[in-house]
Amino acid sequence: MSAVSYLESIVVGALQGVSELFPVSSLGHSVLLPALVGGSWARDLSIGKGSPYLAVLVAMHVATALALVLFFRRDWVRIVKGFWTSIRYREVRNADQRLAWLLILATIPVGIAGLLLESLLRDFLGKPVPSAIFLALNGGVLYAAERFSRRRRQGEEDTVDFSTEDTLVMRAVTVEEATDVRLSKLSVKEAVLIGSAQILALLPGISRSGVTMVAGLRRGLDHEDAARFAWLLATPVILAAGALKMPTLFTPENSASLGPALAGSVVAFVASYISVRFLMKYFETRTLTPFAIYCVLAGIGSLIVFAW
Image 1 (cartoon, one colour):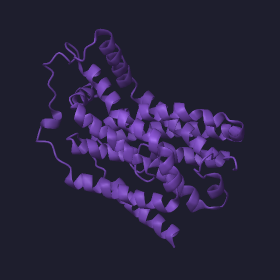
Image 2 (cartoon, rainbow, N blue to C red; image 1 turned 120 degrees about the vertical axis):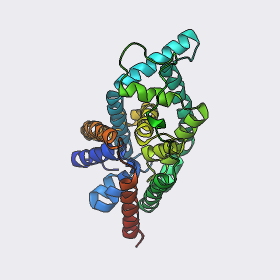
Image 3 (cartoon, rainbow, N blue to C red; image 1 turned 90 degrees about the vertical axis):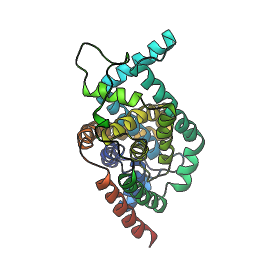
Image 4 (tube, one colour; image 1 turned 60 degrees about the vertical axis):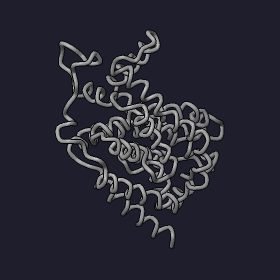
């Protein structure tokens, strides 16, 4: 197979950095864009088995995860500290300890499913027509979630109980800490259900962040908290997948794609960081509806192009 060019990698890196965090499916767009452009792009950017493009995409996903680690670095410091103290003292008493274990338990189902199903689903469904169908379905799911998700009782979303011992006493509590306290109050069942929604993102066209947010909204989270939990959940999953698959980028047959992979990963990192900053502000007051409309239109439009 042909090596990925610098231009192709940079364009796909920008697309990956945005579409992985926006609820519009990075994998679906990574399949549809080359097919729509055609020519050498369709030839070079195929996600078939052994494709250098697939190895480059893995590197870009890792770059996105690193951008999330940087953006949520204060959260991850508290979470890692909470996990360490939980192990050391054999307790789960405060918000950081509980959130650490919720994230671990919630990522187990998608980890198992990814090992068992990812290659199979990618090889059979990683084509333009299935990707277009799933992208349109993704939009329908986002729209349905906005219309039918359960709403919290008035005032509940702003109420955090700071009287318990899992809170920070005698100092100001940041917005991020207050959000993590709310997330830590999810039950294990709720957290696992939300995390399991990521399994659907193995289908090209279904957004990881989108379906995880939808599951969070259904469990009573508001948009901002649902987005935050979705990205915290996605980070270890993407990093773990990258650790397993990154070695394929360094095989002799992919050596020509190393430079483009690095360039595209840098672009993906920057685009991801800008995207998460934008979306955290966006979801303070806005909804998934614009993304739902885009996915439906883009999915149906792509389907018309490729089906006829």
